Image 1 (cartoon, each protein chain N blue to C red):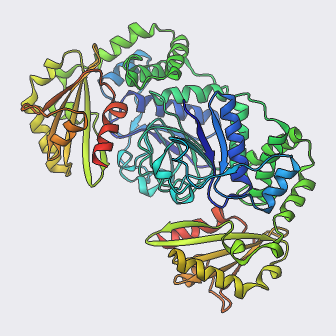
Image 2: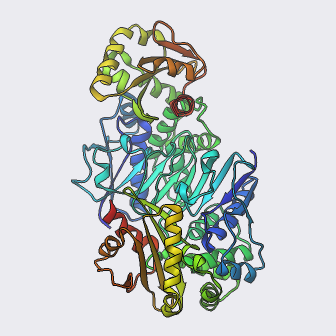
Image 3: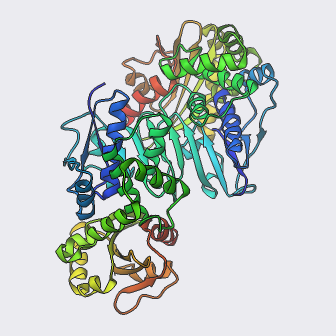
Length: 309
Length: 309
């Protein structure tokens, strides 16, 4: 068996980095030769978590086929969210918690998908099922991932599995997860240091809906006003990305992690239709307010998929 | 949680029936309300296995949406192999051992795919991981499925996981698997009692390759001559199915289960290209001989997928 690379999606977040590290460790324990890599540099939140548990960031790759024949995907399955040359390598394993979309293989593979709030929760259960011990530093990283994806277990994507995993991993890592979690989330919302492009596209993903390509970004903050003070510049950055990449519509979800509300900033030819998908009319400032909405996957993508089907 | 149906692919074989029964049992133990159903009547081999372990055949359904909102798929994921109205229901769970092709969901789900010889081997491991006991009769049915899919562990699709599962399930079921297995496989090759249509299409599946639809059937025998004595009638049945359903090419794999060789009978506009995919020239009798080939999934579909890509 030759070496394989393990990686998550483009624009890596804490879950995607933690999952690559955890799954590579898991597979190496089972006798595979794997290396966790990433499709980009860690963001501020992930950097905080890596530092907290004294772990190095995975090496960044641009392509995979120049190194390996076969790869393992974590935290994504859609080809357009993966490495640029994903069509040049075989996918041998997928561990994920997203919908399945456009993912096809020529041969059978290992695939473990569970509808949890975080893929690190899937991995936590896999470690337990195989009775593989999780080292304290890796447990801390996986804990950080679940806190990040579920906004400290407050997102509607949170399942009982995520809660159990947080309890178990916090014990293994030796941290108070509420105290640590709030510090970590705040570290990720240091927007003053971020460029307009980072804010609108740093966590963005593309979604094919009908004939359209929607770009959906999300940014967390402790104060919506901090973000919208820069609205004119953010809109310029969104428009430039749409022009350069052919996105039909760009949606930026601005989420207040303290009270779990979001404003959506919407540009593009179907902006009004996006607003309608949530039963709203688009305001003159291109925004709609969605109380209680914090999850792109569970609360934003499904209504849009239905509206654009 | 409302009731869900659990079923395998169209033209059910022993694995698909056994997997539906086993996974429904497993989910009911976990507190779900499920019913194992089938998309057709059991074949001779499956009937032999059901009788041997005193089990009733699952109820046959034509559509699912008239009964439930959500279904669990076993032993397949490709929509064209599933229930006719698969686009009208949500898929909540998939347990499979095939390639992923054309399977898309609107929401996250449970998906457990492992590249084993038989999906009952995946299920055997899942029962063990959750420490759920397998009743003797169900173990016998799962054992029958693995024997069927791996031709008594002789197919190249066979993995060490399948061998371990056969040992474990034979113990639970209280049978000598080699003696029982040969009886069961022979019961499935009673071709004299089968119509031409049953032979060519009874186990057939459709595959989209490039712009083409290939229909690939397989029939097991203990003597190739028994099958090819009827070649003219079998070709008529294949041609009629192509005309009626718009298949571009029809491949019938005729497998000798005693010596693990196959002849392919090939009709349709790309028949010569099919032969070339295996490095052969199509003989005037529309056949090619493939020594050591017994697996549609592992030895027939991949070269064709590559040739028609």
